[in-house]
Length: 243
Ligand SMILES: Nc1ncnc2c1ncn2[C@@H]1O[C@H](COP(=O)(O)OP(=O)(O)O)[C@@H](O)[C@H]1O
Ligand SMILES: [Mg+2]
Image 1 (cartoon, rainbow, N blue to C red):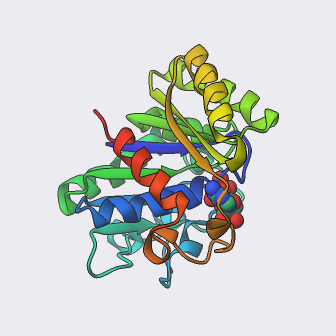
Image 2: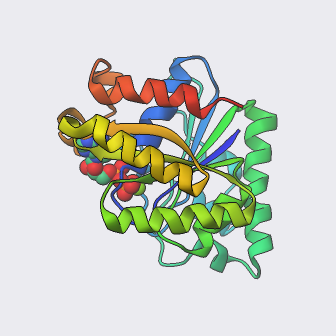
């Protein structure tokens, strides 16, 4: 499956979630590739202790081969990472038309499926409404919108979910950093909101100090696997992959 992860505002927890989810699924024996398509503010590489040189941007700009941008951080897992480097351009503006950008992204996906037999591709997308996030949303089988309960995020989530419907991509909502002490009350509110939008609610991840204290330097699924965040992530992962 091609799964994209979006948000209206930055900092809702996409990169953290996608990275930990990718490792969790790979630990379960799935072949996973995570692609950082947030070329204006890439962050995926920070969570993996690997030296990255060639990136997605280099491949899109025809400066290297596809094999040079795929990294395998752990020997014992079929987890592949395609990092990005900071770039002022949008993915689509590197090409003459959005169609060309889409074809180039599809070339990567074809390679991952045919040569590496990847089961699921996870896209860590750029926040906000821009051509690059819409391109990824369009390619994806399922778009997950990661939101907090902040009204700025909620309003943006509404917009993104409508965009996803227009593109014909099924959307899921995931609420992150929800306050622990009011989790039942909040769950009822976000469930109602998701219903109104016609989007499925994947669940909510409470604010977890263990995650906050990683400062994006390590993966809790590897080092703190009993933390609340990891337990909630495992439930969400199962729901996400239901066909
Ligand atoms: N459930 C959570 N509890 C506490 N901190 C979190 C949680 N999820 C993410 N964070 C922290 O929030 C910050 C932003 O997360 P990040 O994944 O980089 O967001 P995004 O990719 O959406 O911009 C990071 O410092 C991360 O460790
Ligand atoms: Mg990010």
